[in-house]
Every structure is written in C-alpha cells, then in structure tokens.
Length: 224
Image 1: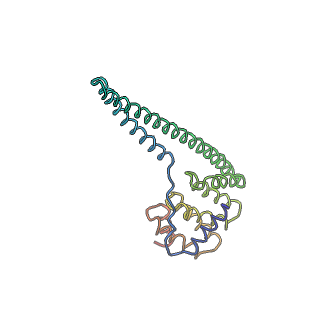
Image 2: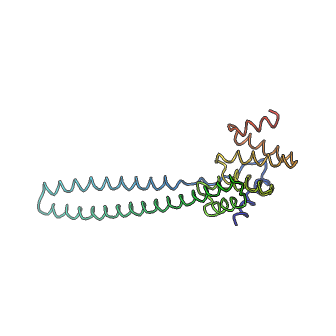
Image 3: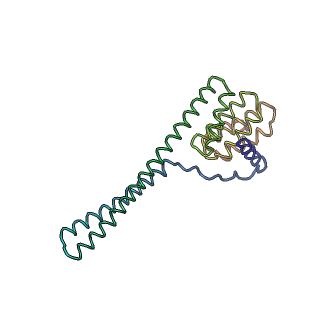
C-alpha cells in the first residue's frame, strides 16, 4: 500500500511538471498540541480556584440563606475542579503514550540507519520502510523515506530510488530533505544518461528551494 502511495506521488510529479506541487497538510506536532491542552486546563483550574477562594471568603463573612447559596456554588465548583483534573490526567496519559510511540520509532530508525552505515542496504531499507508505513505523517517519515531511497540506490535499483526521492519532495515539501532528495534524484538521472530529466529536477530545485545549498549547486550545474 505504501509503495502504491509513493508511486502515485511520483506519477503526480511527472504529470504536473511545470505546475505547483500539491499542497500537503502540515504535520501536527502532537507534543505541542498536548502542551497546549495542558496549559488550557491549568488556566481553567486557576480560574476555578480563584472563584472557590472568593466563595470561601463569602462564607466567612455571611450567614443565613446567603450561606446556603454559597455552599451550593462551592459544591458546583468542586465538581468542576474534579472534571478539570480528570481532563488533565487523560491528557497526560495521552502524552506519555505518544512519547512511547516516538521512542519506539526512533529506535527503529536508529537501528535501520546503523544497518545503512554498514552497507546492509536490504535490511536497512526494510526498517526505514516499516517506519514509513507505520507512521507516514510522523516526524521521522521524511528521513525514513529519504534513506530508504538511498538504500535502493545502493541495491542497484535506480528507478525505485528516484521514485522515492521524488516522493520525498512531493509528500514533504517543507522538509529539509526535499531539496537534497531532488538533487540526489537528478544525480541518478545524470549517471544513467537521462540528461533531460536531470535538468528538469535541477531547475525545480532552483525554483522551489532558491536559498538552499542544493540550489547553488544546481545553478552551477545548469551553467549559472
């Protein structure tokens, strides 16, 4: 299924040359979202505690029917506080679970990268692709797909490597890997005598990523 998605991304790239990349939704940083929820919960708790303090002062200063009313309001505030504490607890649990997932993904990536460095490309590519399949929108997905492509290049599979490198730029256009992936794909094209395709990618790098080192090298390769 993942391979089909990558092929589809590459097909879109080839079919829409000269146009704009498809805008992909930004990847939500789950840690930041969780932090925002915790902060919002704490703000709500602070407000509730302030109201509770005011009610207690009122209880000390008044008596009679007014006291009964204040006691009822205090009970409502206690329930509200319990609800807020419950929300905070569930948010904390979600953040811990998310952290555990991220640690597991990092371990998978690190093991695959070690295999890549040892030139065990087949084993490394399996690790990178499994990570990509598990969480295609995760923080390591762009790196995983990029290195999977380099593994396939090392396994003498240039066509697949190009597909995956181009897919990096399409699926993760804001990633720092995107211009590097296009540059590598251009180099593979050049090494196999596809001068027109190589030039096309170099021009794209200059257009889409003008401030990058890859763009400087692409301009030089294009003759200024």
